Length: 297
Image 1: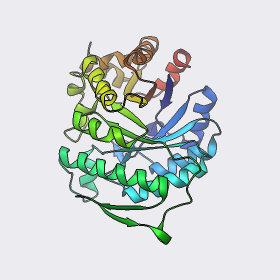
Image 2: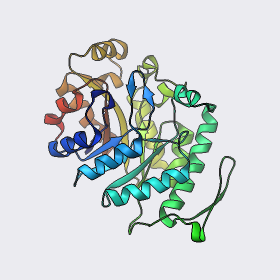
Image 3: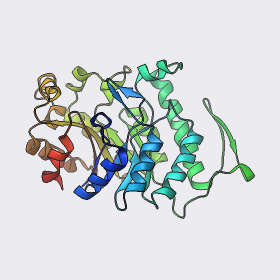
């Protein structure tokens, strides 16, 4: 199993300092999220943070978790991915997500699309990104994007090996349609809890292990050999947020990932039995990732 902690923007360390520490601890990779804010947490620009991480490390993989397709043009994303692959000396993996936080989209003056529209935009964007990252060129005429980049306008320089493209999805249609387009799918266990445009912990409490297993099976039905990761919110320690989440999530499946470090680590390790080979750990309370390190690494 591989474990990738997500940059804890609320805690204050610069992305480069944090990534260097994570590499020294022995984590397999590090992630940079794409938000303006979540609650009171303010985020650095995802491409700047990922570049800082790449320049400060030598071994760990670097990934975006996940660039927001409602913020980013697929052309911008592909251009940044090519640059990040060079900055990281081949360690970058391009994670692109559909986007889910309505507040951010509306605050920037854009319309927040409904679920089916977000999925359609996402599938088109993944097709464009894949083409641009592999060839530097793309001719695409879709419902949401019209792209004409070729000849002297081609993006580049291109790396010797294609940049791995990762999708994050949790619904049946999204999983079915993105799986043929990418090099890894990260199943978002809490996807139902964000479909309304904000994270709903009460809905999180209704997610079952069978639901997560079914989503993994959906990926396998399309491409049986595709690597599968999973996005998990984890929390340990005495922080009031941990206590609150324990009360809300109770004995639910996702509640297993909140509590004492050893029991949370055991729940994370058990994900391998579902066919998962990588776990992205997004901490809900400061110090969570460090508390899990002795048990996972």
